[in-house]
Image 1 (tube, rainbow, N blue to C red):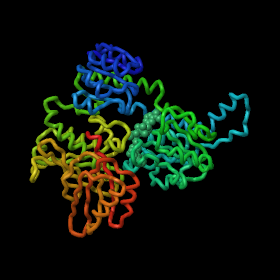
Image 2 (tube, rainbow, N blue to C red):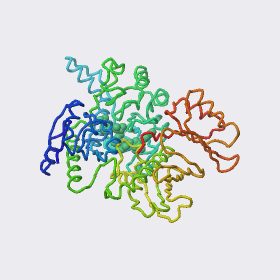
Image 3 (cartoon, helix red, strand yellow):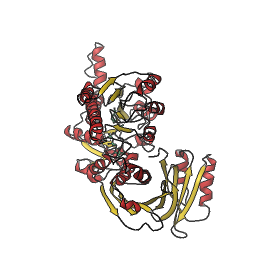
Length: 530
Ligand code: NAD
């Protein structure tokens, strides 16, 4: 097997591959044209974040069977193009947790003791003992937004420093956080109580600008803010104002809305702001971890046929996959659809199989449901291998039930989830054996093509509501691609589902929520497909 490594990778990875008998070629900084020319000779490609593995590169890689990303994000790999060609795409989730959590603590300490400013002063030949009065961390309240892998490890380290840790994570069962000694609170309570706030969520439509002027207003004067997650979770303009006014005493960022951060960025001009160039994961250990992990995964795949860390296909025999694939797509879309409607931590998932599908190997389909459910809220790429493990770690109970009759359908899938204090069900099937459709949402019978951008509106079943919705969308030039309504009983609760060509602008969402007869509005994005 010929493996090309096209980004800088720790030599430990190369060693493992060579010891296993692979022929390894390391060629970094190739242009796209050079890579397209080169790639045809290799069965495997290993990249970090530098190489852009576009559809053209994948097309040129006629012998390619596997693409590995040493690290987590897969923004630089066109997984869809790879899936179409039957190429396995894998990554190495989790290798950065300790390193990034330690960096967060380093930022906390550096910020509260003003280490960078004091260092600069000493290096400038000064001895300003009185200028650098700091604050102790012990007995202070640390508010963590996002209690996933990094957030919960930061909690552990901060507890070691004697801090009180409170946290907010609407997608995590509070019992899991409490077991780790984190007091679970609402977001407004976190804003009001924390002395230091650190964010550890992915950047999503919900978390973009989560810490903005309105949030800062609710915080204690003198609060400090850390962002070692993703640029944009803290609104940089609003933070600048608050740092200038002193309402926020200090802030520390490892990540920025635009990277590299422009040298004239206003935050950089402030004495009470410190920043690092996205080095949260940059330690020898983390780099080595991901290199070893990807090399071992390649060896497992080529020698034993086990696709650990694969993001685009489960480990099932190749002859079973074609029959299973449409159900995997349906299951993942249903999971993703359901996830975007949930409020509160997910506690249990039951996947029920009816009709023909109940006679298949359903385990990968259940995993596809989990993959769809977890992916919209988690940072790591959720794959067929880690989805059950991640569910277990988050305390989510998973059940599989096979039932006989699918009623009017050949096959039927139903997902039942418990999240927060609510229960939800979602039914789905395949039309013409391959087209995924959602056919019921809780008590409502529907027929939804599960793709693209959607708007779900629960409303009072009263004349005029559809007209109002149409008018609001029209006023904001939002085009309706498809629309259907369903109700359980006349005059009761009704559901309006609208397919949109484009994502819904946030101001239109807020405007719809103000309508008296509209009970709730949710947006669902299935545009990335599965
Ligand atoms: P994770 O997926 O394990 O955890 C993310 C957590 O955020 C989950 O528990 C999820 O439920 C929660 N969450 C999602 N939406 C939320 C919301 N609206 N409010 C509150 N919580 C919400 O991810 P992780 O590995 O812990 O990574 C956390 C962040 O750190 C990510 O943004 C990741 O990109 C970033 N990161 C940065 C670096 C760096 O170099 N600075 C390195 C690694 C990871």
